[in-house]
Image: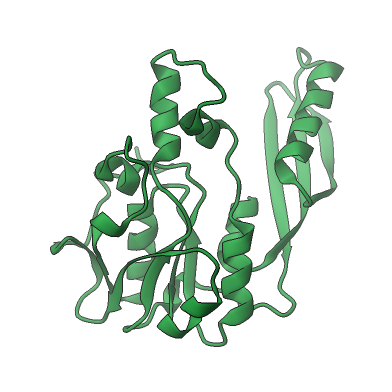
Length: 235
């Protein structure tokens, strides 16, 4: 939720938490649950919510952001001539998940930490939103970098021409995982080159072009990658 607010360019400020609990849930669980939310949320405040009884456990969280003095993004605002940039390494969370599935339990491991304790990239979001005066596109990569790129391309009706060798990833993570692995909670943005000088850390991975609609990975064009990505509602 916090990462989605960052993807818009807003300041994550508040959370509301609604939880429905069955009989088998005890007070100790609730204490640990809310402690975990506070630990994960940092300076973002829990401002309210609701607790009700239910036959199953349901949790619903809403994040609220502030837009004052910020230029808010839209996936439909990528323009020809813009640079495609990402915030940090990709593929770490997917590798961490595979390690857990294979029985690896070193919770100090970089990849497992990335999967279990992700952090929204608040700094990257702030620097773009406060220093870009024109329209720009930005989204998070929680469903995979390739999916985020395709979402922007389709919404903006442009081509995102990507050099996959420029995508930041650990030496132990392959390019396929960096492109299609999810849960990294990093950001990808399409911004004017003039904005780059205001950013403290970023990686340019490609260019926005108006030749066609889709993504081009090392010269290979795709207008659909549904068979490669995670879809919450895929039947």
